[in-house]
Image (cartoon, rainbow, N blue to C red):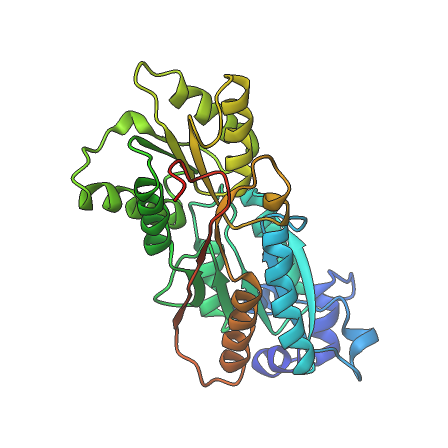
Length: 332
């Protein structure tokens, strides 16, 4: 407000009252103040009065779903690094909705977080709300589902390589006709994992069949629907690579409802390795993200960015294939 007042040649109190539409200030002056405030990216701080002397150092986190093991583990990695560096975190969930993602971003900016660490919602195809942060010089780091990598740092896993490795494992252990169930095709993470799956088939001289690929949404229901669709074909797959565990669990239900055995009739691999992958029957083979390390890496990127010493950078945290009973047809 001091800067706005100086530029307009008025007092700070005039600027303050104008922003609040005080009847003591003319409509013309109110409009002038608001126009300049918008131009200068001024935002009122709702905590300014109470936190003026002891303002906390905050990093905002935006996740699609706060309750899953995958995201909670990443949050733990972020939080531990932040705490060791005298930062606190504020966590928001978008519930996979674009509008809630925009609102979460706005809320975090309004409470004056110093930086934001985010994972895209499934609905997000327009990235302009994030793009504006570069103009406002607000540090942003993406993880897992990312965008605008030329402007912002990010942390991902080796999606192409891990999907290729998982597909090759299925082929090496007796599967011959492998289906893929993924999410929305606009997501880079879906494109990359599908590419890895297809590359493994190409490397083994196996023809690509579009009817073996089902990509709609990342959730349990779509996993079930996708498996039902694939297994209803005249020549169904004898293995399925599911790009998340929620999809894999939906597929597992569909396989069992059709009276088929896992892995003898249909082998199955999931992704992200939720804790309960060990507790389903049979235990689920999964591509395991090193989620805590991803969180640590994201927060360290943010801290370097806050110090002004980090240009946009992408870190790849390798995934691991955790082999359990659901994928091996040929037991050696």
